[in-house]
Image (cartoon, rainbow, N blue to C red; front, side, top):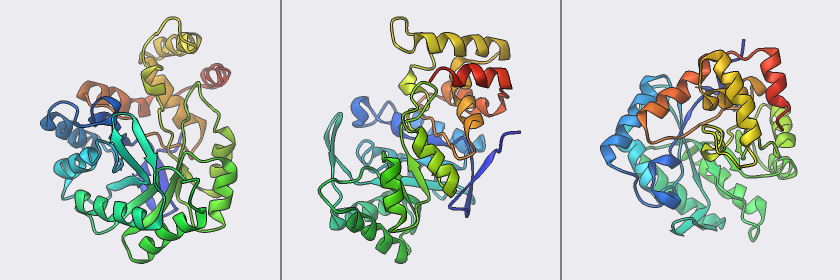
Length: 289
């Protein structure tokens, strides 16, 4: 049996398939996507289906995703964990600028608290380490916010195993987010480190930004799709569900938060928790790396 629950920092239990909000924004993660009522419906349905981890960020939109989370879910039900991120400034579609100065991180966190209508953010993640600001200053700012009760736990996004080790010497780290999926396992050393230290790993692009859900002939993932499609057929599910089920089987530290703006796709993603992969399935999927 694969574990269905992961305890963030050993304290906050969440179901291992969460929901990410990036796809509620428009092209280039800029502005809204579609109607507010549609986004609200997706968020509420996710929680109705048992999702207990909502992963968002201040720069999705920017501000749009956090505001939608509050619009849809506030007052938040007991047991719902809200995670957000700061440390990146947006100036346009697909325009990202790292900003890790302590005063800016504080301002970002406090703005997220207002938008989310929270007194405390359960998991506040540094969206990117700023190479121009000492790590100790960046994490020190988050530690100060934690001591003030404005955040409960600290996470990191897009780091190396070496950076995680360095960060752990400065403060407690509850989670990391790196790109990791069926065909992209560059962060395998980081995953092993998370397993060793009880750190949650929230893989972004768990569906390869859509490439693991459909057959895209001519791409470098075509062969992988063929294998996952074959396994999917044997289980009566979709290739995307196989990609998510593989993550859940791969490591108890993995907690994917696939995003979508469509109710039908949300239902499909969440149904992946019921897929049980056998040893032969896992062997074939593991070999795709």
